[in-house]
Image (tube, rainbow, N blue to C red; front, side):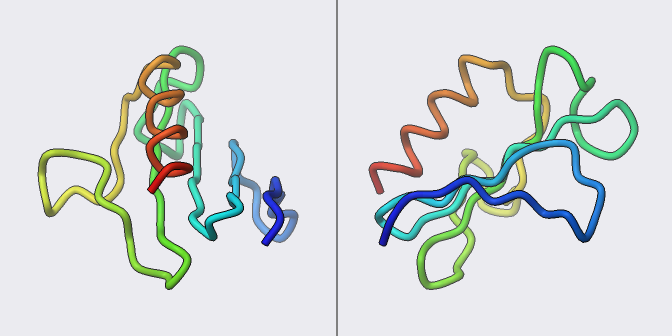
Length: 84
């Protein structure tokens, strides 16, 4: 499978979704009104595996979407999802 950027034009989202060669996908969203972010310095992040199961990105097993992630943390999460 080739990696790709996915733009959702059906809904107005403020972010990006990336699908990796391993089939895993990460969603990075940022908005001042719609997401767990301030829209400028941090983002909301979620990920799921090739089989569609959510990937837990936090220490809390109930928190599948993590908010208020800095640019450095987002970069770390991208690498984590890419390498799983």
